[in-house]
Image (cartoon, rainbow, N blue to C red):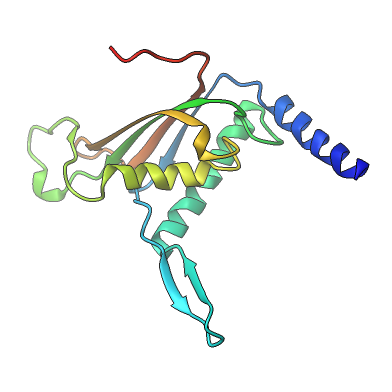
Length: 171
């Protein structure tokens, strides 16, 4: 039992030691993907298993690679970057359709089609769990924007995560 307490204490110390950054900025290149609905199948023995759709799994794996790289650049090599409350701000930039291309390029504008904004956020938050934060329940403030990129702008998800020091008042 004593060795278990020591191991838990060591993990906590590593997380606290790693938790020295104030903010983390990163870009995940590629078309933003929403968290898909879990799929289920029945095993021959009658058990039911669920899994993420392939598109969600692939995007989340790519996002985790970029989150790890951003953490490495920030000097976080062990544990998670944030162990307390955090604010997460996301901008999902979608490809400008070729049918919208003009001689005078259009600037960024609101994206009002699928995927739903909360599912885009959920895919990112699931990706960051265990890397940027211990659990996505730590995110106490979340801002997500979906935009159609300007003509020729590359699709991506821009993320800013930072520590929350106080409780913000709603105006």
